[in-house]
Image 1: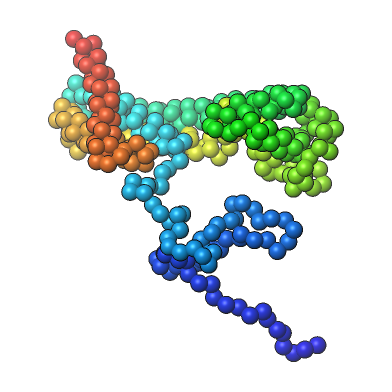
Image 2: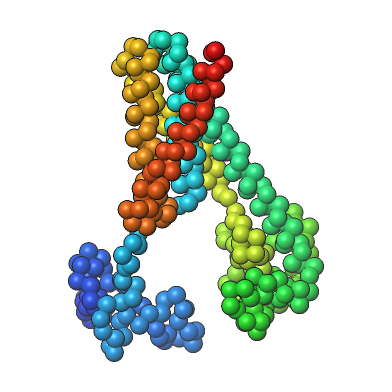
Length: 336
């Protein structure tokens, strides 16, 4: 046996064209435009940025003037629900209790409401997300059964009803429906599914062998492909909700309520006279509502320029202030 081994020659990859900063911070990512085997290169891997005839900046590196990275809208929704309720409900309660004269009573009542409200809001978020998941899974079961008993023409019409309004012609819609139908019947069924016999009988029509599970097991993403997933996601606008999402929603809403509710209570910890602390609480809550509205406009993409941020800040202040003022006015009226 030879004492030395031969290695293939190695050459460094040239940096990306038109982007010196990216070449320093990140390793170059190369596309695959041509395949050495019989199978063509997948479309997502193709890109002309590294072709010898191309020059200049890649279109993927061009950014708009107001382009930003947005936060998951589900997380933003939970934060908005928790913070907005936390800023208004405890503030209205403390404003009503301020007529008692002592900040100690306001603090005790506010903390009790804050803890109970945070737990209640968290449980409510969990149950709402769980109901959304159960609704989706029921519709998935019904839609899957309907796909199995429907003819090819009916499925083509449903697919075209989704793709037609966005500009896809009928011929392409038929091809998409045929491909999705083949994928649908190549995925193994769930255990205990009453339609497993129909799936097994029609699985021989599948054209995509990569979707079949080995040794009878189901692929992790099997429920995310095929006609059923397509009709639910693009036809009904529904997606499955994971278990982690349910707990994350409960934690985000509850924590948002707790953090938001502590803000109106803070002045009462430092000022023993409740009426004076109420003034500080109003000012502090108003400032936080302004900042919260501007940040919300930023992370949701609603704000376009300074005008969008200002509108988001003042609209949030008006809504929260109106709710708190109404609650305080009702309490004052009941007191006589």
